[in-house]
Image 1 (tube, rainbow, N blue to C red):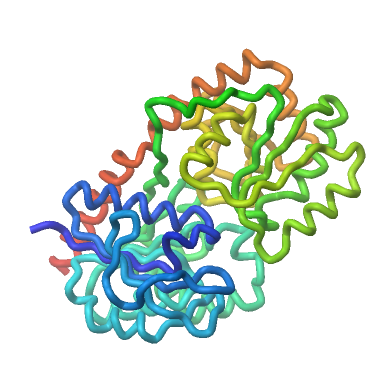
Image 2: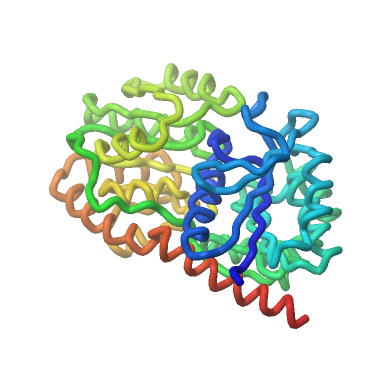
Length: 383
């Protein structure tokens, strides 16, 4: 009989405004189904200030993955959903293991409490919520909630999933004794790249337009690049979060020389792959990432990456697939210029990046996660 795994996440596909975990859970579940695992996702209809146009409570399919959506009220990021909790209370014993994604949300608190009560082993994926920048943001409300609710959830989890060694260390710093394991996020590595020309002077930023992404570093870095290479264009692709784009545009208006920057809005699927494949270089001057899936996606597209040392991508420096730099305008601009001014270097980095990305292919990542599931479920049945 196949392993039965229930995934619980505050929001799900197609609510991609919430960043990498949405697509990550979707792709993981798709591969787990291919490995013979029985999988279902329980989530809310959250989609920013509005709701997804999805059926409530009944099982439906999202890109082939069975999912049940429940209404949240009020429409806040905490996503309180009494119907979701009632469904979990009725159904949780049907599952061999529950995989809970995210902290500081109603769905994760409810799922962890109900799993403890039912004796069902739970995997908990903080997905970066315990990294320094994330836990420090709005600390006045996160710190007491963590002590009241999340510390117990982390300690009671059969396994706490970290996507990098750096994230595992941060989890253990906050909760000594947590049973951590590391499985990276996965990426689709196409056999053939999109048939688009590789631009010679194009920087791409791909992700949420949010303070954590480091636009306070990126804008002055781009001004430094523009002083040397005024023809360089930067394409910013991603959803605006909490009006951050207006703040970024105000920063752009104040720097001299003003760099050429275009905001594309969110891009997905083939459009995203084509954008990455057209870039000279991807930049991610983030103040903190537990993984940074866009880095792996760019590497898969054969695109060099400049990323801050607040992200767990030292392998770029070790393998020569990009630059892993201090998160200052000076260092980011310097790394960008080294790639933009040397096409041969950029090409070598891109070729190496494809080899690096192959190690994060979804099939291998799903098999790693399934191995963890099987061990934890077996341990849970014995205890």
